[in-house]
Amino acid sequence: MATNSADLSSKKWEQSLGTISRPSFETETLFANPNAFRDNKRYLDCDLNRQFVPADLANPALANYEQSRAKAINLQLGPKGDARTDLVIDLHNTTSNMGPTLILLKNDAFNTQLAAYVAERMDNAVILFEDHCSMEEHYFLCSIAEQGIIIEVGPQSQSVVRQDVLEWMETMTLHILDFVELYNNGDVPPLPDTVSAYRYVETLKLPEDENGERIGMVHKNVQDADFKPLIKGDPIYTLFDGTEILWQGDYEAYPHFINEAAYYDNNLAMSLGKKVDIQVIK
Amino acid sequence: MATNSADLSSKKWEQSLGTISRPSFETETLFANPNAFRDNKRYLDCDLNRQFVPADLANPALANYEQSRAKAINLQLGPKGDARTDLVIDLHNTTSNMGPTLILLKNDAFNTQLAAYVAERMDNAVILFEDHCSMEEHYFLCSIAEQGIIIEVGPQSQSVVRQDVLEWMETMTLHILDFVELYNNGDVPPLPDTVSAYRYVETLKLPEDENGERIGMVHKNVQDADFKPLIKGDPIYTLFDGTEILWQGDYEAYPHFINEAAYYDNNLAMSLGKKVDIQVIK
Image (cartoon, rainbow over all chains, first blue to last red; front, side, top):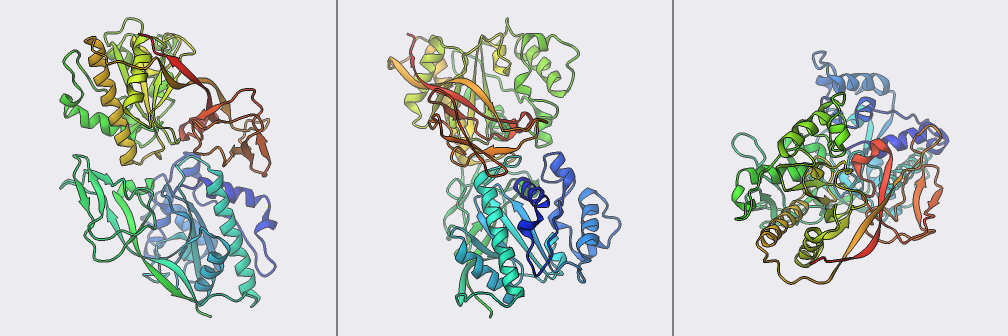
């Protein structure tokens, strides 16, 4: 999840706040990790978007660059649990082939209606629920606010700006802002009863030896196949010695964040989700 | 041109030199930029593969990490102009959609026969001649030796290993080693009279303002369209304000290295080549 398009959109919108303002609310922009951007990296010391658990925010011993940025951002937008900000939209890129994905952390009226609204207006939008824990327990930046969502667009190599990916990010952001305006005014148009989505289940690691050294890679059949079904017996990894490893799970899985560059530090291979029909709560 | 697949192949082959040895010659592996690999970057201070002009190699004031590595590698494989190594095969990755590309620096019997041999055995191989200057004038690492070639495979994000890209690199390398063995023994099989290839013409910069700040990006029609023809009037850039910039060149151009991550430091957008039929010199 590099931040090139996110930074570019953020900087552009800083200079034209009219584009992202709506009558019923105020919009601010925040450039989350300027030093990583300066150094053309995902982060300097650790993943900023994993630092927002309350205990970590309150722990003064966590003092590296991103841990310090998390505290500063929490002060600016939060504090988490009693935030002055009602909604955080966090803009991210990924090297994975996820298209424009809307990640939602709560299964409530606001989020399910938002999912249905965006899905109807953006053909290639993917809806992904990561509602397996409470906002308090989430470690994401956007969990500071009562409502927090992530826009995740890819594939885009770190350090590169792709026009298609940038446009998806901007289009999805503007649909979300339009929806919030309608929602605030009680003007949300008729929506379907359900919306097709994915729900996060688990994260898989790359094959490792007993010393934690990587000994394999994502299988070429799975590469770029984000949100394509994976069933028991499908090849999922190839070891460097050529051996194919088959997936042994007992459900139809939908991989995403496949072979994401930023996850190599932890030898993560991909996330798996299930396909679900989400009830739109009205 | 990140070095992930290159590093992986190099390390694998270090441990099984039999795969890359042939009766008529000895093969050594060299891991060119270990500190960039350690830091998960293309380079620390400057592009290693631009440091091999004789005057720079002889200039003790050029002392940063890559400039020092260049001198050390020249000592190990060279010296350039009188090298103990006959052939350098330099393995590279790119974030551009170049497939497996064989870059050749000389238009002679060895290189043209090699091009024809590889093209016949690898359907998706692309042959690219960068023979616009002498080996002495080239700044590439592989110009140390009398014969130097580059294998360039992509698209692959920096920090990521893709199985397809890794396999293309290994397949192309083994074809080249097979060819060298046949060539040394006078056993090269019958080859066609010509081989379809591209020849480097020029490098284009991203749109900049008067202060050298980037004000635009590669047009989405051109993104991923490496080695697809570009003709006068085709859109080539989109400015951040939405304006489309059209290409005004007077020849049918074949872009490559489109939107390569490592070239952003110099605001380079892409290289352009012409399509050519190269005479196979027998």
